[in-house]
Length: 438
Ligand code: ADP
Ligand code: MG
Image (cartoon, rainbow, N blue to C red; front, top):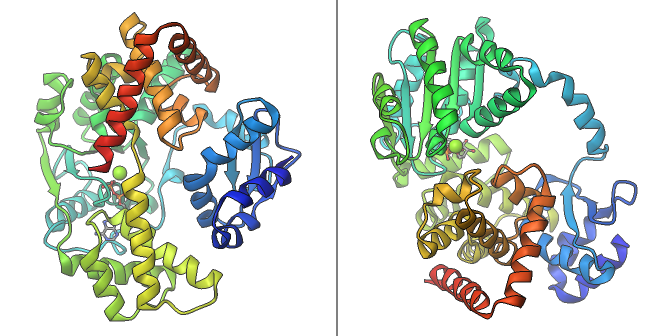
């Protein structure tokens, strides 16, 4: 079946894309089920590319062929994912330590410029003297500017010092918390988070509106702080500006040092590109480095994306990275970015339209209006973004993708029954697409 679908896709896409990416996919018949197709890609780059560009298309093709809504998984892993899950389970209660820390996110690999100097220095001091200088250290700034990198760097710095380090996003903290509540093993949870030496929590802004988790985090914070253990937090905004965050948390987040990271200036961008090339074994002429730095956004994650892309192109077609290739890749990336509609945008538009808060849509509330809004967001996201049903389920903290497919069904039913509702949905579709093309 997989091969057949690939043949169909081949007819609809540019030949060069087929040759470069699609041809290299292998259908994993053993692991595929009626509603879940698995393809194996030769490497992560191809996997991500196909996922971004064609996972939605592929799943439509499957649906056309079998009549069953199909989740398409593109992976580089050869072993069955089920086995992995089974292996992981017993570990769930064990403290998350160093293992989660990305070894490449070190201070050495972090390029310092005036935009991030302050945050870098603060993070380094905290790493040298955890619990002694600034507690908490709170780093904030836009996406892709290196906050997560600095958190891991603090972790890496202390790895060999027999300290217990926990790195988690606030969402992982929350999931862990609700998991242990359900399993009635909350003591294990507390043992883990309240007894570590360094707690690194990423993207704290998502605490917004989560009252139960805020309460738990408050006590975690207090206990660690009293014991002189280091807490480091990151966010996209300073504490004051996080809506839906309890005052007592805001004020605690300001107890230590608040450091911001700004978008990199040109020289820093150039230095970062050079560093990334060096780390990835890529040769780029200065002229190309300068061109890229001058013409791309300041989001460093995107800078990395472009470099990896360039590298993949050049190895796939076995040619040197020329200025022309660099320009093409940059343009392609820009076009893709423009097309990308994010879940956040959809949530914001729907929330605004229905007069409720974005955080309510992401909450677990069973309020009828909110449930309705959540369903609409799911429906729109399935139509406008490449998000799979499982990834939407994850976004909304739902148990699995059946809740998502249930929401889809409900919206479709309503659209058939209620003409006004359909108009509303069409208007929302239009609005989101329009907002994005500006
Ligand atoms: P954030 O958490 O702020 O969204 P990340 O820390 O995830 O951003 O950074 C995105 C990517 O950019 C990472 O791969 C990171 O290594 C890289 N990066 C960010 N800032 C720098 C820097 N100053 N030097 C080197 N790499 C950086
Ligand atoms: Mg981050």
